[in-house]
Image (cartoon, rainbow, N blue to C red; front, side):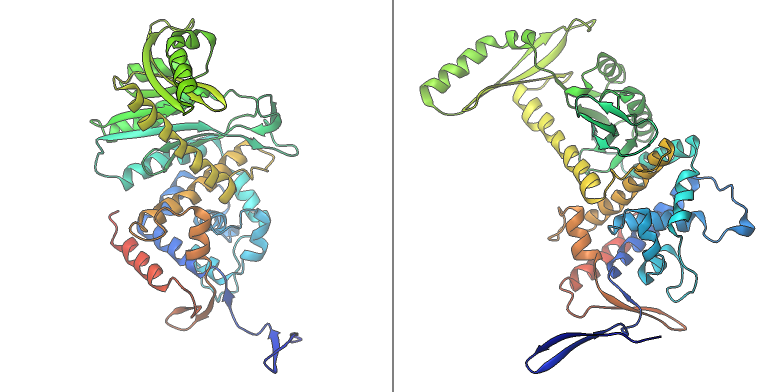
Length: 441
């Protein structure tokens, strides 16, 4: 084989020369932390139990758990496309964290292999894997909390090509899928990630999905008070009725209309006069009983009335909480914005909108794979508490903890990862490893 040398000029009278004889090198050595999390919490070992394997064992080169790990870890490391497998299948870190010897001649799965893996999933497997998210949350939180906050939100996923059930959505003005997600409000842990056709309303199937999640949470935490938050896209009578029946506390946005404005007209006049007098922002809250045309009963509505330089701003939420209006709105409802931040991480930093398979079920499976990759970062953050990265987003954690250059060397007794000597977070990665191993399971 020809040895290539590259000339990059000189500096201080020294020639700068590069070659490709550095040995087995990786740029993702920090991904060993993902392996440690997986070993400690047994995430993929449990998740693969949700899947069925109908392949002929005699003709199988890659086990289901290897394919599952390969796909999830590639996504976590920023190699979200199936095509990336054709280069990553030889990477020594990827082989090690999937469960193969880095020096082995056996490569990991190729792009066609992963494509078959994603496209062979059935509906029952998807149901089981969806339920696994809630079961994993319960496993990671064995002590019943006094309260839980569930944040539900929908997002758009633009589609291109011939994906099944892609439709034009008038609000977003694009062809798309319409995923629905539920997060734990305190930790951001994803409890549901359900793919829906592109022309569905934000609240489509919301009650059915919420029922599955809450039923499992109530079974595990019978004394826990559950709160539910959502924006005006989920202002549906059936959702209120379900929460009231199950004694779930809810705060749901309402679309502003003339009837609601009429209820707070006096307060609006008051803040207008105060603004005209002081020239400063005015902000007031109130609550009243209201019955929309589709509601069989009256419900409590909390209103925020603001006068800003741009004009009057009025917002309304419906709730069954008997708390001061400003507490309901400012301390509880507005905090649901964290769910939007988690969706941004999923879509922008873990590329959960790469749902480009033709089959709808394959895209639902892919959405769950990206969500499971996000779980690894949730657990990394959990073990980074007290450090400078405890609130860091996925991209920052990946760059500072996972993207580490190393030489990989296999001996008769060990697999050595010789990490870059100049790596600036050596103490942090060592501390994180110890915390993962000491964490309760």
